[in-house]
Image (tube, helix red, strand yellow):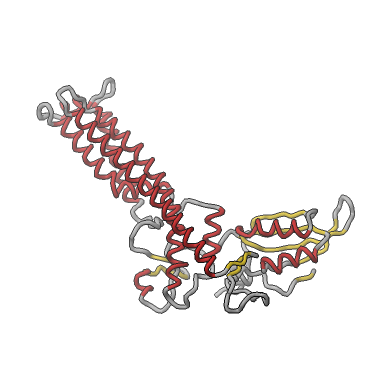
Length: 362
């Protein structure tokens, strides 16, 4: 078994070894083979930031539209229910319609948070880093942003989205509907005087008033439970809420830590661990392939001898640990060096060592 002299780490290379052909006064920003001048890179990031802001604003506007639908539908249903020939069942039907609007808005809210996450990542790790020493982005911000662009995931769950929109807007609509239903059943046209009269008025067609009342009670309890259980979920990046971040297993108030000299990671970036992979490359041009990986990806490569059991021919087997955002780059490098190579990329449970998770445990 042979190993190379390079580490297997994925340290960021915002300031790699300069090319002798480059002007020292014109520093070039390099990332995985792309060489950009600082002005070009900053211009690209500014346009990207503006695009993400625009997408976040579009989905934020859609949230308001859904709430407006619920308000208009509620007003129309109450007008019909309290008309001389109105029926209280219209209010219950509207409650179901409002619930549908709530789920539509929760889905839209998750998309809003998707774009908002990227905006916050740029604000905290790129723009904020320009204002405070050492005046450079966090070491892994580019990888985090790239992974989110290549493999987008909703930052918040559907449950948190429903709970947040329920507490912010729809709770008040449900309160109005509940009071209106009670008023329609218990007061109009005359005030009830007994439980039997209440259940009689609450009946809808062949459904008894007791069943209708129990369904209403269960619905209200469900709303209250969802609102309470989701109140402690604070993964939404677009909200201004008290933040608590876990550092080394200890829960720290981010307001308190901000006053100290210890830098604090943005609260919404819960871990530096990206999905880790292991690539096995079977090739007859091991030197060319490994040099491509070492020079262009700054990844370590380990070579082992192998034998094809069908042909009996000897081949080299290269092993390379990498993260999910580097797969496409690795494919191109291997293909350029040996188009006939055979490559297997498999998830790794844990990669320990330089550039990944520290091997030594404190």
